[in-house]
Length: 377
Image (cartoon, rainbow, N blue to C red; front, top):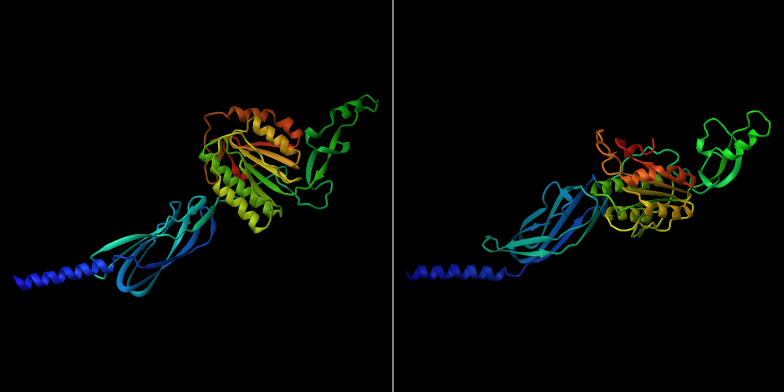
């Protein structure tokens, strides 16, 4: 019986020594290599490297969960055994499923003695940010919505019409919009005894767009509207960059700096990545003089129209694009029957479209079964 007790005491001593020796966590260095940003719906490669420093031999497992909206093909788990410095590397593709600024929640290290008798765990802080920009889609934009030129020389056929600045009047030419007919001048020519008279039209000045600003109305609508509006805004920003125009994104909380350089583009896309619904009165920040302002809204009410009128004093052209909930088709969606009419605010906007056009504010409503890809076509 005595030898058995002796051996039992030895075993208990060894177990106690193991428990005592491995109670302190080893030194850990965790590094992640991945792009700082990416677009929604794309994939990126994540490389995780962990280095564990310990004077005693040990085994360890490190689990590094990704943010919920960033899904790795394989859960990030690194395991190793050894003494001194043990380095383990792990690679996996990531699917960027949702826009936003995502922060890694931190890793968890579990370690034990070589026999695996006592497992302990501790958090490993390694904060890292990944910005997922909203996805973009192609657009088919008519000339009335597209900013045609950056600053530069203009001709009678290039640039954007400015209804508030007239070059004069001229005779009607086939293809002129009916809204440009100068009815008073045309009527006065009928009384001159010159037969049928001469139909004349207003000849507005042409102005060049100096920038593109996209304003998102976040005061109304649901998450479906918001995601569609964000993707449309990102696509309009892309169109502006393709035309070598400075771009900016604005909400009621402010606007990103207008520019073509990388920092301005990142700032605009980051604002789109972070935008959320914000109940309250719309507020359009001051825009760059001579630029084009696109206003995206689910329910453009009188307050938003008043803001658009104020913005028109600075902008060359203002376009209000209404996206009634459930009335537009996202890329890839099939046409569907509409059972309800447009909201009252959208109907009221359509009734004011003619008057707003005369003030240089375009109105476009994405009605039932119209795709955001073919905006205005």
